[in-house]
Amino acid sequence: MLAKTSCPYCWEEFDTADVLWVAAHESLTGDELLGPDKPVRFLPSVFTLNGEAVDLKGMVCRQIACPHCHLIIPRAALEMVPLYLSILGTPASGKSYYLAALSWQLRRLLPTQFAIDFSDADPSLNITLSEYERNLFLHPYSDRYIPLADLIPKTQTAGPMYESVNYGDHSVRYSKPFLFVLRPNARHPYHKQAEEMQRLVCLYDNSGEHFRPGQDDPQAPVTWHLARSQSWIYVFDPTADPRFRSLLQQMYHRNNSQVDYALSEFPERQDTVLLEAVARVRRLTRLSATQALDKLLLVVVSKADVWFPLVSEDQLNEEPWNLVRGLAGLDSDRIVRRSALLESLLSHYSPEVVGAARSNFERVAYIAASALGQVPKPLRKPDGKVVPGVKPSEVKPWGVIVPFLLALIHTIPNSILSLRRIEKLISVPSRS
Ligand SMILES: Nc1nc2c(ncn2[C@@H]2O[C@H](COP(=O)(O)OP(=O)(O)OP(=O)(O)O)[C@@H](O)[C@H]2O)c(=O)[nH]1
Ligand SMILES: [Mg+2]
Ligand SMILES: [Zn+2]
Figure 1 (cartoon, protein in one colour):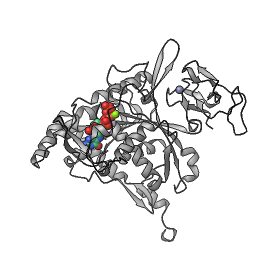
Figure 2 (cartoon, helix red, strand yellow; figure 1 turned 45 degrees about the vertical axis):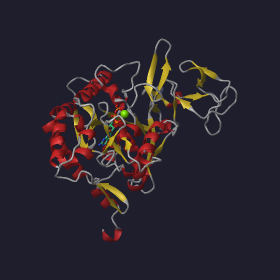
Figure 3 (cartoon, rainbow, N blue to C red; figure 1 turned 135 degrees about the horizontal axis):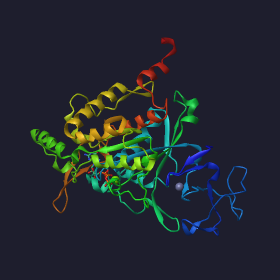
Figure 4 (cartoon, protein in one colour; figure 1 turned 180 degrees about the vertical axis):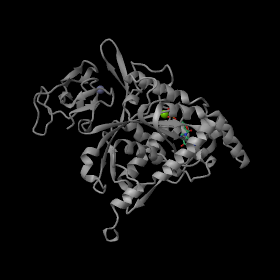
C-alpha cells in the first residue's frame, strides 16, 4: 500500500488511509456529490479479514472511491504509483488513432519483447479505447475498405467519455481515464525490483478543441493531467501544415500519384496548442515564464506513412530495437539520430514548432509514427467526396510505442534497456 496517491479523475493527492468505500447494500444510496441514485461513499470502521470494508448493512464492499471527487477508482491506485502521460495536439492531428495503435501495440509487445506486463487496470474504464482497438485491429469486415473517419470517430467534448460531479454550488466535468497496470515480469533483468518499478499508467483521449487557447475551463479541467504528467506526447501532423502540404503535393506529383485526399481536412497552425498547454501548466504550478518545464517533450510527428519518404537517410519504418535472446534492447543511437533528422526537417518547414519546444523544455525528442503503417487509399463516398480509407487487416502501426518507451526510461530507471546493456546483462556466461 502506498502512503499517498492521486486520483486519475480529479488529480487531487490524498492519503490512502482516507480512501472512501462504495456501499454494497442496495438500500444505501444517495451520495452528496454524485446524486441520490448512486451508492453511498463512506469511511469504514469495520473490515473483513481480507481488508475489505463492511457497509452499515453488513455487506462486504468491493469498490473504492476518491475522497475528493467520489468517483470510483481501481484498487491498483492504492498500490501503484500513477504514471500520467498526456497526449495533446490540434483536432484531427491523429491523437485517437495514435492512442489506439499505442495501446494495441503495448499489449502485444511489452510483455513478449520487453518483459513488462501491461494490462487493463479496470476493463470497464477502458471500454472506449478497447472499441477503437477492435475497430482498427479486430474488425469483423477487416478485408473491406472502410473510411478512416468511420473506424475511429472524432473525440467529443462532452458525453459518455466524461463524468460529472456536483460540488453543490458548481458542477465539474472530468475526463474518464484509461488505466493500465504495468509491471516487469519474471523475464525482466530487474524483476527483483518489480515492486518499485510497477506503475498505474493513466492516459486520456482529449479532443483537440480542449487544447485551444481560451478553452481552459475550471468547470471542466479535462486537460489538467498536463500538470501531473512527467512526459508529454505532442502530436504534430505535417499533413495539416501548409508548408509540408505543398512539399508533399510536389513529391507525390513527381511520382504521378496524388495525395490530397490523405492530407488533413483542417490545415492550421499547430504550435499554439503546445504553447497554450505550456501556459496552462505555468499557471497551475506557478512556474515562472522563463523557467523550462521539468518534463520530457516527445514530439510525435504523426501520419508518417504519408510523409516519411521526405527523410531518405533512415528507414523510419524500421522499429529501433533488436532482440537479444528474446529480450528487446533499444537502439538508442538510432533514436537519437532520427530525432536530430526530424528536428532539422521541422526546423526547415515548421520552425515555430521547434522554437516552442526548445524554448520551454530542456529535453525534447522527435519521433516519426504511423498508426496505420501505410498510406490510406482514396474511397469515393456516395456523395462524390473522396476520403481516406483502409482495410483493417492491413493496418500495421510503426513507431508508435517508441515515445512510450522513452517516457518509461525517463520515469522508471532500468525499465527499458539499451541494446548495449541488454547484451552485457544477459551475455552467455561461457563467452564472458
Ligand atoms: N495517413 C494517416 N492518417 C491518419 C493516421 N492517423 C489518423 N489519420 C487521419 O487523421 C484523422 C484524424 O485522426 P484522429 O485520431 O481522429 O484525430 P484526433 O487528434 O483524435 O482528433 P480530435 O478527436 O478531433 O481531437 C483520421 O480520421 C484519419 O483520416 C495515420 O497514422 N496515417
Ligand atoms: Mg480524437
Ligand atoms: Zn478524484
